[in-house]
Length: 379
Ligand code: PMP
Image (cartoon, helix red, strand yellow):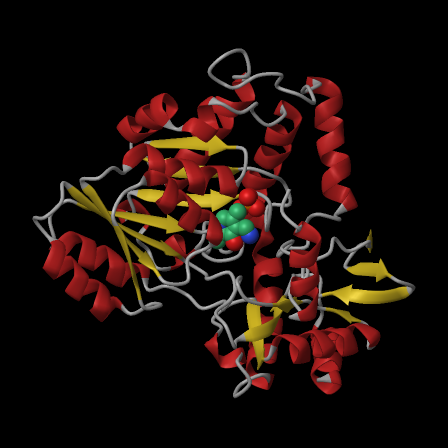
């Protein structure tokens, strides 16, 4: 066997060793190593994960319907409970689109969709900063790919011009809110680019925007009024929706094709029906959470302004980077803030580019303006 221990030691020496933190959750607080801290690292963007009222109301519904805690099978065998297709219909109707397909997680979605749809005759053009799950999907697809500079649509257009007609199809792949920089893609510009060239398909991951943005919480595509023009609109339930799983909104044909060819869907046990029911319970209520969305926007602007000149200005959302640069300095700063009562985490390469180690503030609707003012003081 390789000497894995010395590799771990090297990681430790370069400040890159990862450990699973032992933490206890208490609403929007976490307890770790005797410290109680405000959680500034959660993806529970609307603050729904600890809402007892929602949990109680769901459990009452559960008492009646008794959704099982395991599907015991892939959906293609015996795991296709009716609640799955119900939720797919609810989502498709809400987005006013033809079809939706559910997956066990965003990771399953992103590592499954592109390998199913793309081949050697497909060129994938992906934003340089797309999430690791999308990169893995691109690599698994074996399709030729190029990455354009982050949000640089002029470069993307050059690539489209150069490659149009050389492939059967071209996929443009982006996130809507980027997970590490918190900046926002110009989806309308991407739609217009896609329409200017033949056989171009647009794939957008809204993991960090679903629930948080748009009048009804349907994401940046709703905010930028282009839901109908995005071929593959992916979102996840593990963040603002306080659940687990993911979806793609697409055409009926693509849905059927994915059911036939997408390996993470075919070869994995489906999520428990009880989980799907909880997702549906929250998804149906998304339009009601506009106050949470407004509160989140207010606190986000406050912190973005305060961190302007220190990396914060990159952000256009509730994900706000504070760029430190060096790995060890970043760890020390995060530890200092933790001692002051703010649970924030260092994000280091390879998750972010070398030399841009950062503290990634990820705000939630249950963080107050006063909390942010105190954080700013501490910084
Ligand atoms: N897409 C993006 C943009 C993400 O940031 C993440 C995870 N943070 C995922 C997909 C994966 O989603 P999940 O956690 O549901 O696997």
